[in-house]
Image 1 (cartoon, helix red, strand yellow):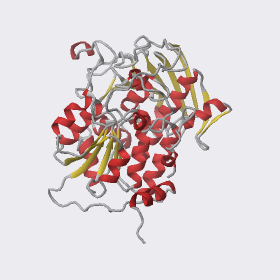
Image 2: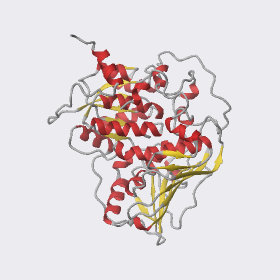
Image 3: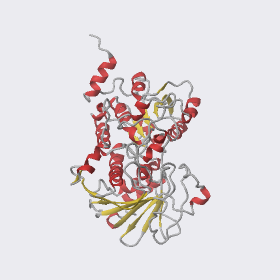
Image 4: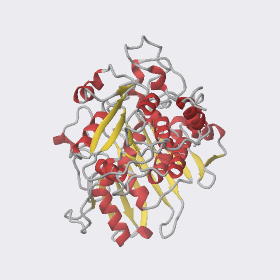
Length: 464
């Protein structure tokens, strides 16, 4: 008996039993990875160009919910003959057997369904950071990655750069003795490229006439329903609790990643918040300081990590701190220039040791330095393939990804917990064993996201 293919897929998908129909392609010398791109404007366009620059990829499909938007023009012009879609579900159906991997480069809240759909089809996935919008979604993505055995990579590019190789070597070789750690600090104090309200929001925006060509239902995806507004799109989604993960989700993956991984922080036992300015129940505050407490593990003692955000909320710098400039592949905030970057505190981190030594580092791929020295540091292995090439080589079976979901899932969960504290303007205790917030039902409910998430018709993505 013949069975309608799409009906079969939907039934199997809903049951969590869908596996790859086409299987994995065996790559021969000269073969390129056929990459489907979900999201093609703004940051996504930068990612696409970075993938193309590896010379290992063929852009095989373009998908964006706003193909007629000006932000998509560059990609569509460069790849005029590549199949294009507004719905990633239709793209995955149409491109079965014609793609080898999927890159999801959309707003924070919409990573999850596209990643889950691709993995259930046996496709390796690259996700922009943060991994997902909610703690529960991070959990499910890690489970799916383990179940379907596909290569995964989160797009915190510095996790393939100098900073990564230094941290890894210094901790493993004992140059940095984790038993002597005293305190950790991460910070993002430059002006934001989004969030125009300065915390002054009293309601969600009034619905507006939708621009021609936008697929608003697919743009919303699993998120709670909102009528279209220009104040939700083109980067402003990051401002709203319902859609973004704020400055922490934007920059935490570039500043906390190596500390979280190589100091084996895991999940916190407590999150607290202070020095808050511009708080309201709709958009992220303009300033706050979060403190994450982590229990002792192995040789590492119990430790706290402070996160500072806001232009006027800079941490006290340690003696001998060395000003650093912008990493060349991170755009400076509006009004900033490369020349004045060194005069200010660019996003980064520093950590103190019990003997008084302090190490520092800027965000992304910048090197880490010991404060109060001439800048010379112990030798470390030369960086290998960049982040994009690393993912493509992993798809080909030639490398292991450096930022897989098993590593970036817990890191992103730390961000999600911080976002809950920012949203409620209060701290809470967290049980890493049960993965539940203790004694705070309102906060605990937000592990699953805003009320009304997932939206009706999108529940299937929450089944592994």
